[in-house]
Image (cartoon, rainbow, N blue to C red; front, side, top):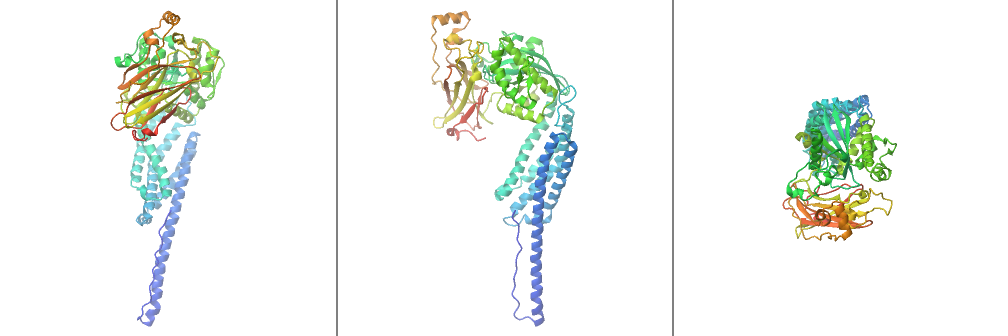
Amino acid sequence: MSSGSGVHRSRRPAQHAARVKKALWPRIVGFGVGGVALLGILVVGVFIYQAISVASNLLAAKDEISAVADEASNGDPEAVLASAEDIREMVSDANDKVSSPLWSAASNVPIVGENVNAVRLATQATHTVIDGALEPGVKILNSLDLSSTDVEGGGIDLAPLRDAQEDLPEISAAIEKANETIGGIDRSKVLPVVDDALGSLTDAIEVAGPGLEIAQEYLPQLLDIAGADEPRRYMLVFQNNAEIRSGGGLPAATAIVDVEDGKAKMADQTSTYSFDRFTKVFHPEPEMDQLYVEDTFTGFGNFTRTPDFPTTAQSFDQLWFNKTGERLDGVITIDPVVLSYMLEATGPVISSDGVELTSDNAVETLLYDAYHMYTGKQQDEFFGDVAAKVFEKISDGDWDPLEMVDQLVRAADEERLHAWFPDEDEQGMVEELELEGSLATDNEEVTEVGLFVNDYSASKLEYFLDTAVSLTCNVEAGTMTTSIDVTNSVPEGGMTKYQLGIRNDRYGIPSDSFILDVMYFAPPGSMISLDDELPPVWERTPEQIALADSLGADPVADVEWERRTGVEYGRNVEVNRYFVPRGETKTISYTSTIPEGELGPANLRYSPTVTDTETHVGESCASVFSER
């Protein structure tokens, strides 16, 4: 930190002064000058000492704050309180120093004043946060007891969350006041070392502020979802990525979960065999309906063909209503990859027939090994059994909640975890947390481009599907081109009959080839070019026609499919059926117009597969979309 310096003043003795005065005057003046210099040095020394003390206290307080989180996680309330008191003393001492007249004066010194003022305001902002938010924050931390989620009967104790509703406004007010304080700092005029420190503080406040606002606004909804006031019933949908769908995979099994006062229990397990498969449960507009084969909204396993999760969830809700006469309070979906993430937090589970699943082997066991260990309906039963065992493990409460939160955030970032609630306020919370999985209808926050794939071979081959999605722009032509690379990595031999494509014979192609309906969703306001090359029309042999007829296949809908176009929630959509042989990669591209107006950052959406999907937005789009 820079500091001010003393001012040295010199003066020549007078030429015509009396002898006595001539002898005394230099001494008087010398003493005066020396005194001022000494005083200046002392002031500077005091300031430097205080600056070092302020820095030391703030750094020590920062370390203590980090310790508080660990102590709370370890369930040590006494240590939390002790650390909180240390933090308060250190920050209060630092605040007392920077609030003194000395620091106010130093703030006006040219050059260094901006840096002094920045440190002064940052310290005062920190004191505001500690003074206003520390006590209620510690109260919440201690009451939550993050070391254990276990309560009698399994579940989460909601009492601390109810109490937190009273304390969150006080914490939010402190954060808001601190934000106003640091808003008076001109960071362009401070030294890099000071600016780096300020950046840490402002970043923390900028993150905490909106987070606290969300917590304060939606905590009542969270308590409602947890059954604080009345019992709730939810459906958990487990998707199978080995039979790919736009939303992730074939819904292989579901679980009906009842929640009351933070405690959850599994009430029922269902599968595609549990419901009527011939009654249409969702009736889209004709321009949307024409995008999908006719059993999309009748069959349990096809609701995820649309990438719009609210539509999928409402279809399940209606299916449940048709069976029971009751409405669900919500629908949540995950896939085996999410289960593997959850096992990172809970540890292994063992199925009813003795198969151990860990975070490392869960995906392979569920999406590949199961088809060698079981046949037909047994596979879905195994899938449901594993889901039940994971649920039991979670209900036991013997796991790290912070680790679980990290894993669920990871799943949400990968578009593998979605939720829907019929209650408008609860759904608003889901949308705020970006868990809704809905199709974007404008380009304000992001410009969403979608390339999704639906299996049509009725296989489990997409365990070996790899995809990559890219976007390029032709600014001069006013167009954008979105491409997906689809790779078929199915091994030669070793696949069971249930894994291979059931419908492939209709087309006269090998049973280890992918049959995929590729869906391109242009951004809102974008028009799709219909000049792209179409997939080949397959000419069937008489034997293939006879086979198709015996299977009841519709030759128009199934085999001679070339292109379907339509609109889903205001988005122009094109669908094509492609065949990808084993060992090959096919690149499929779509071109559409660049929407008019200001465009948010480009966001590429795609079907989550077993593996990670690489995405790339080309430099040619730099001038088209705003930066994130």
